Length: 200
Image 1 (tube, rainbow, N blue to C red):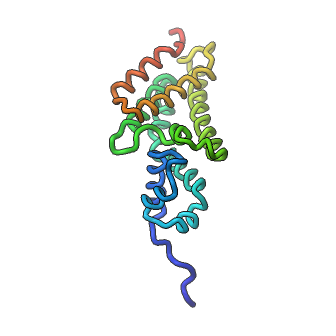
Image 2: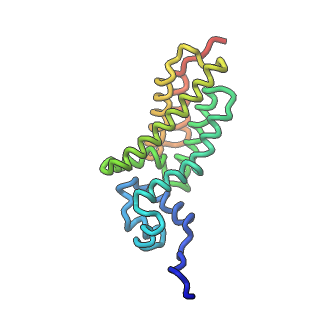
Image 3: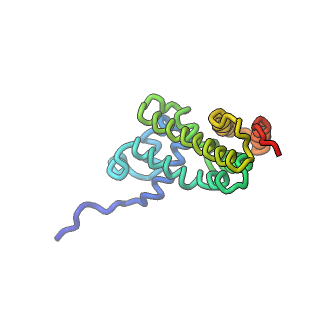
């Protein structure tokens, strides 16, 4: 019996990681099929056969980003002894990534739509959902802080979560614009000063 089909001539995981960096650099719309296939070293039919569509590839790239690049920051948030220490640790962990000269600057998820993906409503909705998930992580960690007594019970947790999400997004944009790690750290410390503290 003859061999069915042709064996895939590329490593899927390597191709996906490369695509992640292309989307990270150019955003969804800026990552043209030519840029993607050239960087991944595959032809368009192979991309479609493996990932279904450009949108499917993007969704997988965002999932990979969260599971790899974003994982240390999320662990820092969860493992810190207090809510505010966790939030500071998450923001600091992110700026290490945002300002890493070996990687594209900023945050892939924050900057993807900023580069024009709002023209694709499904992609825009997907990215918005991922950003909202980050805000929910902040809110949940703040709730734990209220329970533990390190965040005042009177604090508006929704507003605080939105504040820290906005700071995170702003750090990504500042990093893309060339801000140094020291400058980004100073922004974090200024933001932390606005957080209401529980009475000792």
